[in-house]
Amino acid sequence: MEPIMTTQGLCRDFQTGSETVHALRDINLSIMPGELTLLRGRSGSGKTTLMNLLSTLDRPTAGQIVFNGRDITTLPDRACDEIRRKEIGYIFQSVALISLMSAYENVEFSLRISGYPAKERQQRAEECLNFVGLGKRMNHRPSELSGGEQQRVAIARALSHRPSVIFADEPTAELDTRMGLQVMRILCNLVEQEGVTVVMTSHDPQMGEIADQVITLADGEMIEAFRNENARGGWQR
Ligand SMILES: Nc1ncnc2c1ncn2[C@@H]1O[C@H](COP(=O)(O)OP(=O)(O)OP(=O)(O)O)[C@@H](O)[C@H]1O
Image 1: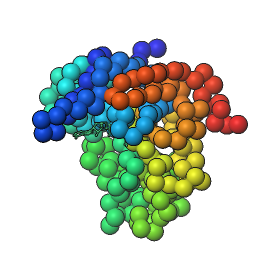
Image 2 (image 1 turned 90 degrees about the horizontal axis):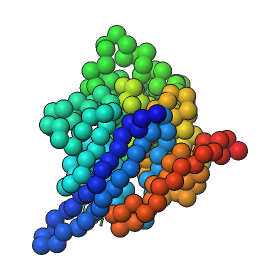
Image 3 (image 1 turned 90 degrees about the vertical axis):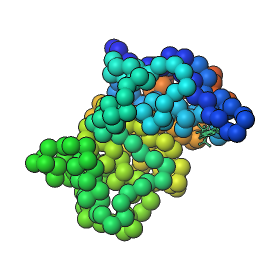
Image 4 (image 1 turned 135 degrees about the horizontal axis):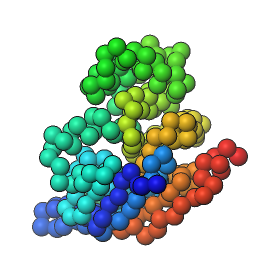
């Protein structure tokens, strides 16, 4: 099988005053479709910088990213916008739902923005909220939901337009253990049942056991990449 995403010689420098921070150096990786890839490393190792590059939110200083067979590093901004709207889903650490909208409206609104056909929006929004176990709470506003439930709405929103990849930056960081596990279970189901590719960062060492591929960063370099043959099987135990 072909990777859904590859990078070659990926670098990202930041200029702060007279100093150059080499946030990422020479990153060469492959992400396989329908797998869960975990990016891990200490604070400041470059995880968020790498996620932002892979998900087209930022541009590299050097190197190349190929996504679904296209070199996305040289694409004009408008083409990147299109990729973000149609092919990528985002889940952030702090949930960022629209507070005046219900769970259902948050998902439906996101479908509207991605240009999803009007006739299918209601059914798709309900389907996604059911998938994350919130079918009965879809008319609640974010303030009427727990932190874990809000993150589940964010997952429903991220998957609603059927992206090929979902990027999740520390999706469990602000949740307690039980809610964090629920969110992880849903992300695993997404990979297993829907065949979505998920790329996530986490500080939690347990996550290393359930990811198909684990990539470790240190000081902006990729120091290890290994595959877990029994990945999500371990999750079921
Ligand atoms: N916009 C920026 N300007 C200057 N330096 C930056 C910028 N963004 C990130 N950096 C630096 O790049 C390095 C990598 O940062 P990054 O946020 O990617 O790390 P991280 O592994 O995600 O950390 P954390 O786990 O704390 O979120 C750090 O040294 C950081 O200070």
